[in-house]
Image (cartoon, rainbow, N blue to C red; front, side, top):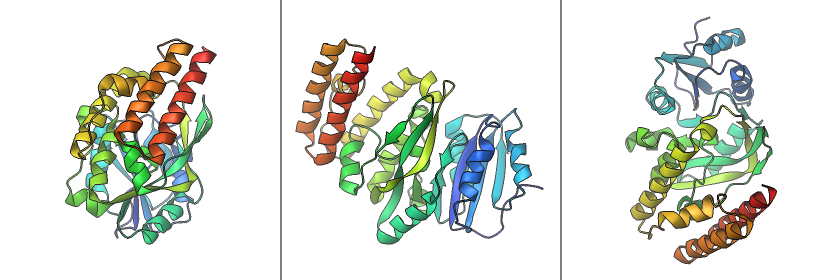
Length: 297
């Protein structure tokens, strides 16, 4: 079967970039195809895989799958190719080694129905693999915007967004921020309407040693600092000095006592800049997590 997809535009395009994901891509695809949303296409951008991952999808014999192959160009290029190829009214993200939980897409579609001005909706997510736990994301537009000044407020791979907004604004994932592209993209997208998260776990995020997020942590941190500063400047909020953001988000280089001191001081400065419930929650959690992590070392 040629994986060419359906001929009519679907309600939802689920964009799944894939590179050498043969071990997990079938489970990832099934988690989308079994969502109970028939009016969708699963758009797989095969970024020059050499492990036969795309061929695994042939065994599903599923007309809602469309595979686009390109030479290996990296994740950002694959995501942008997906933006070009997508045809659905809504565009949802999915990674090829993760799992979307049952009901994820339906809950996000209901969110858009409740919020006609909504442009992007994420979910809570669970970690699995070499690390476990639930990550709760901010719910309201206001809370998401408070958190965006410090960190991402949407789980990048669990987002559903309106494709017309992305197209009309000519938004693209920026290769300059290749290891923090989601944070940068959704920070810019937030200028065009309401954002939020549904109050349920919609995504299971696999943690394993070969992930980009582990291999490029230094690059991610530098990109993160640049994105946070640029977003603050765009929204008319004073940008925090880089060292304050570092002390809040990554104080783990210090000892236990020093970690608590520097992360608490950074949290206080962040709260003074932009007071709010979400700012307080996020900063408090960072201080507690940093201190506990330092004690475990």
